[in-house]
Length: 372
Image (cartoon, rainbow, N blue to C red):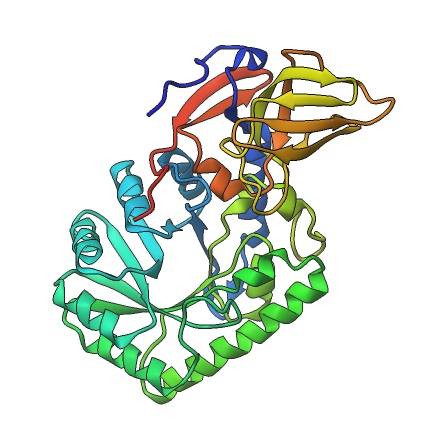
């Protein structure tokens, strides 16, 4: 790991840059907002469960705070992420993805001896390989519900996979994974509502087929920060997997936020320094492509009207200064809201946690670079 860009007690303006800054007050309000939004909510007789998505933050310290506020565990996308979280003391993890290949499955099996581990499948061949590992795993069938990525369509093939899991001496059929990722960034509530209603019909169809085959379906898990209350209201999901709600980013901020979804705050920032003032209408900061992901758009210069982060190269960010705007001085620090929080987090070793202008804590991002 790289050296931390600050130490506890430092002033925020003395943090070395680029740095990933977490504003603790906003972060903690986001945690509470989600917990409050599902408090007392039931699907049928079951209390809605939160299984927060750790692919967003990759940090056991944050996972523990989510669990302390009611999450039953976390999910992640890669075996290496799960390893980092278990090493950090997290005891209940769903790898909400397919795990294929002998080496990865062997690592998953080893992990299952240390914690409760779940995994997703969409292919009978994968079930056979998991069974051969001898690991005790919770296995979920991933449904295709509109994401057009992994997943199997509701039907008899999916029923046969569930039956094979149920007959296994090691594997437990834990339910269905149904995540509509494309719906998360549909801009209007109406668009997202329609997408989730369509996804719910796939879930209901699959549950009917399982019931007909006398195969119990314990859990339907899925949902994200942009739709999770729509999944709850659709009554098809009884476990939700929001991730980005703790941070928010520029792309999520473009969504319409209205009932039943609460509004979350920007809590994650890339702190950058103005390293050059080559022209009256332009400033250059030390945070470029290697400091903030731009796959969902450029960062937003936070609370500085007239400053527009226009372009990024490897180590530089170009900020246009509008006529009449307060121009930043050479050496001034600027807060940038990332365009996409998840891949931005993966660029850093540390969260620099700030409250009231001072560094309160440093949290290692132990699953940074956990790609396999």
